[in-house]
Length: 176
Image (cartoon, rainbow, N blue to C red; front, side, top):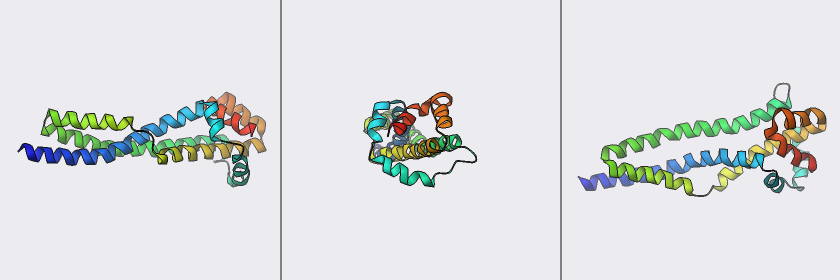
């Protein structure tokens, strides 16, 4: 009987490794995006003078969401968060099922699964997560760039006063 439990726990561990890695990537997505938005120096290093030509070329394709660029900026950030939150929720189901299965195998097996789950949180960000975050920030950058060309005062007021989370990215874009 213990051999069957060990085999089942190994299968659980392999599945958990795949699922938990994706779960932690979603968590790290949110952390990286928030860290980038509040860190001016990092944003400055991320959005360089070379990117200005991309902003000029691509910003022509940007249209306000509904009637405002502010709504488009909010939607760009919310879209990324919504996708990641939904993914985390979906990934929580097999993780909970693995924990439940390990629990029925015994406390030792459960502790192995829980330990593996949290150990996977320590691994560094994948390039896919970084690319997704930078893509979301590029969308916001394009909107800010376009809005600033059309109505600099309204863009400045929104980014600096109404939604200060955009303050640093606005500053970087306007300094290009």
